[in-house]
Length: 242
Image (cartoon, rainbow, N blue to C red; front, side, top):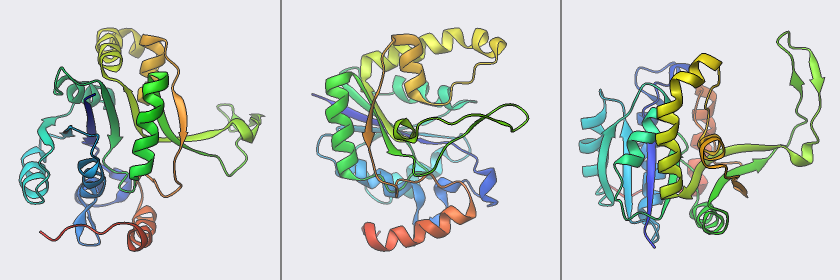
């Protein structure tokens, strides 16, 4: 079985109020992207990694992260697209054709654990699609356009979805090709594609299995997230010296 990972590193990070994208910001002396990249690199069951970066930072990712830290499983750093789904499609197309399963992960989530990767792969083998998630600790409300509460879902059935999202590679690759062919219709209909499990359901009719992850697997979005990430760093990961 051949397993690969696509790590998305093309976000602008406007809400971080920083001069550089959040995935390249310094976190305890190392770039944010390196943390999850190291975890995937150390996973024995991951054979290949493709990083998707914006055009401006593509060469810097190659030289200052992949080459500098010896991330030998990275086979390519490709340029992303306008929307997230374009970037995912570019990453999937860059993988080896022999790939059986693929993790799709946000580079701004530095604290994914090896255990989460193992469980996601296990359930992807069983159900064709699996996604890291955590149960909602809070009561969730559904509102209308005027912010008036319209319903209260049972909290027992509400999960907060994370990444990685893990799939049979031929299935999700074909689903993304279908999405790209269909994007004009989706745009006209006002349908926003926000994650990979939506694509699997819309174009392959496959439901993903939720896999309980950790609450530390946060996506860094705001300055407050960076402060919290520093405390997580202290208890979780030790990165190699360059």
